Amino acid sequence: NAGVTQTPKFQVLKTGQSMTLQCAQDMNHNSMYWYRQDPGMGLRLIYYSASEGTTDKGEVPNGYNVSRLNKREFSLRLESAAPSQTSVYFCASLEGAGSPLHFGNGTRLTVT
Amino acid sequence: KNEVEQSPQNLTAQEGEFITINCSYSVGISALHWLQQHPGGGIVSLFMLSSGKKKHGRLIATINIQEKHSSLHITASHPRDSAVYICAVRRGSNYKLTFGKGTLLTVNP
Image (cartoon, rainbow over all chains, first blue to last red; front, side, top):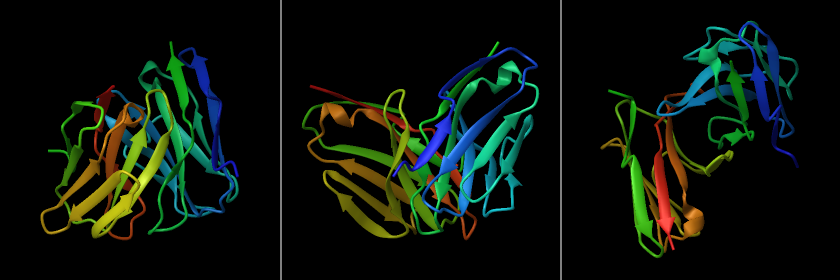
């Protein structure tokens, strides 16, 4: 049982390049999330999807887009990367309100 | 003021010591999560609380809803407990969480 799988683990981009971070969960969870983690800032919500077919903005959505492709997969796209998007990105999923969060192992992104 | 405040920010202990990490929040919540993150590693959920106390092995989490405060205790601490411990709160039926900045725990042998 893999849980939440994120790819890639590391990525270096030049300013202006685009990329998609992939996330898949095999636990049949309804809700999925994308967070970024920066030193001294804690985890901040970028986008979330409460259920298949819906997505909503979090605290820091600017510069990002998401797609909830199906119940398993939730991808995060950077259309034109900026150095301010250098961060560690975590995908997470949740079965329901009374359940724990399950996190992927993170993607370390550097934008030069 | 952040909605979720953790203290201390950094904590160094000797192996075997009893550890307490605190989390205070400023809004009404429906649940509180404690998470663990090892250096360079992923994030693991330790507890989810809405009232009272939970225990798992050497870890104990308590919450006082009236005082808007939760504590995470580690008994007989061990170097493998060295990690960042993160508190997060959920408000109402909204599935979004607000996170504290974490407490870095170092347990020396």
